[in-house]
Length: 69
Image: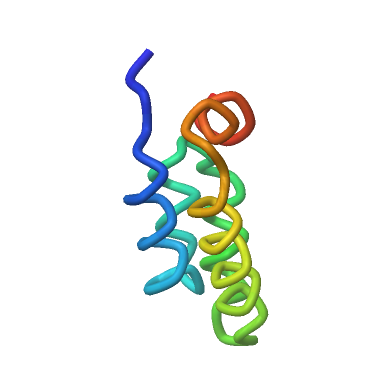
């Protein structure tokens, strides 16, 4: 298994979270597609910002266990 970088995921979520790029990076393709389908509502952008902050505040071990499956 290839470990994912929490910094990369966090930055992607904050900058382009509305398009779900961070979800594709983490291997959550279905959620990435949902983000793409609803990107016109700006709701995924808000959620992406929150997720990016959460990713960056987790320890590396917590991030790997919870998000990088």
